[in-house]
Image 1: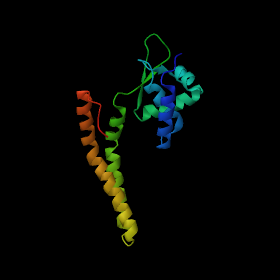
Image 2: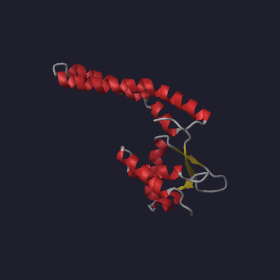
Image 3: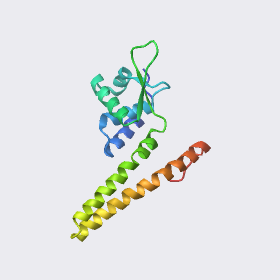
Image 4: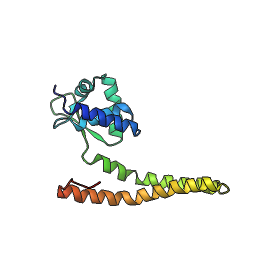
Length: 158
């Protein structure tokens, strides 16, 4: 089987791991990103990644639970295929907005309980403020991304 984009996929997976995603789900996600149309079966993923079927099973479960990938039954075949969910990243980010707000509320409660420690209160206020800022801005950024994606102008200045 041809393995497309292996080096870049492994480098991207290493970056995702450094950012906090478990290693095998990161490798699996990046392999699926480089997959041909129709994705890969679990056996093809195991072959591509040079790992056991068990490692792939855990990784695809993690990625499905996080809504990054989807399982696609293949009519007439026993083996399902896996593929990346279109727009997975911004859907996950938008879906986590209630978590950001709830976390900010908890941090505010912590701040109220430590009101006698000015440094700790400032630290908590900074975290709470950042979480609320992210919750407010994420929908705006996703809407902006949708406009860019629709226009096809991916030459976004960073």
